[in-house]
Length: 98
Length: 487
Image (tube, rainbow over all chains, first blue to last red; front, side, top):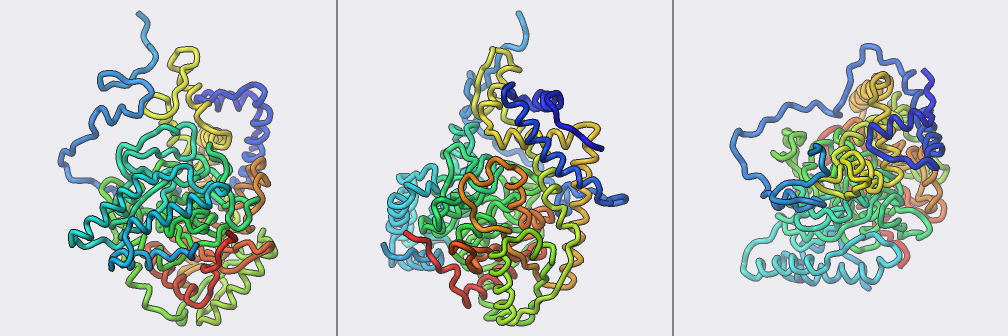
């Protein structure tokens, strides 16, 4: 399947990733991304029928820690890196009218 | 200025009281002050805190308390590893003001062993690069030729060790980010087995690939570091439960390479290599045979697919890992037009650099409904085939040899506008990353312009002891690791 990365596809990806691509950069970025996608499309030709996926490089057992409460980070430390916070909470733009 | 001693020598001098930790750290700081103005290996030094930490170690020794195995050793820290109370910026505008609320396990363990972990070494933003040109702080330069890159993404760490600013550096390696800069800068670099060292406190790039490791002058110094930082960590469930022997103790086992068989896969020792790298590697093979090793041909037939496999998996994981940068809990915030959606988009667009944005877009593309199986899914299946290639090869050999990089350090700016050309720099390092295997890069010769060439030794899982033994024997019989860049 041949895929062309055009402005429309780029805008879809930008919307999904919450990135703003300035209009004057869209053509050049589409070309860069399209070049990479085209080169990597060749991977589809590798025979993999019946091959299991390896999302991790080594088999990883499920590890459970002891069910013992641990002290979390203090609220002022957790919010210490937020651009805006108050009363131990993160402040965001208003999302509900009224 | 006198030549800088190695880590082992420094530790002995502090443990015996021949030198104070403050003296050792002050010496490192003086070297950085004198030499880092043009190299820019560090984005921050933190001299005051480093000297205070060293003074605390000296006070403990004066009180008669025993010191740890890294006593007084200055260890430079890559900018993506957390040290409590210090900025960890990952080379990004996004995290320029991020103060670590806790320390990475590797950092805490090194400090528990009485190392003085200090500074922030420069890196490609979030580890996404092979040249350290993709940092919001500007590029680091190669100590051997300041018109050239130091490699990446741990380019600042490799340059710092090569220039004698620190005997050891902590770094991370996702697809070659320790090994390739170590090769470009003529120093020794180790990517451990996936899960051998905890990633807790490492700013994530690609979670099925990220590893914490080190850069030093010698394999012996890396053994010292690995023994201190490796092991199971409850805070990182991907750390391996299997036990592995201490590397430092294993170093004295061999004086030569008799009885060892090294596999030489054609796929990693011919196609795409520059002629000067190929010549240096062929000489290295002969020298290894002179030291008693047997070299045999092995096949890794899926290695030619490793670069697209790696980049599809790594960018897919990055696109999800970096979704956490929303301008709310940490990181840069730009309000835009005032809505939540506008704030998210403006924060991310201003915070991330061009290459990071490209990789987020590529990873999102690879995971998108309709294409996910053709791109990300196919990459995870090819990864299985690649893992099987290594298993088959290790039935015939103890370790696998190849150059660390197909090229020597290239000029600044030469590849930055061509993502595919930059990605191909990783062709020889990403196979071990995809398979989760340990790999060591050793200085083994020089190419055109007297630039360092690195030999990569890839071992079976958890056989860092073997890799470091081989490296130690090699460095007992050669002096490539003792060469110093021009002042």
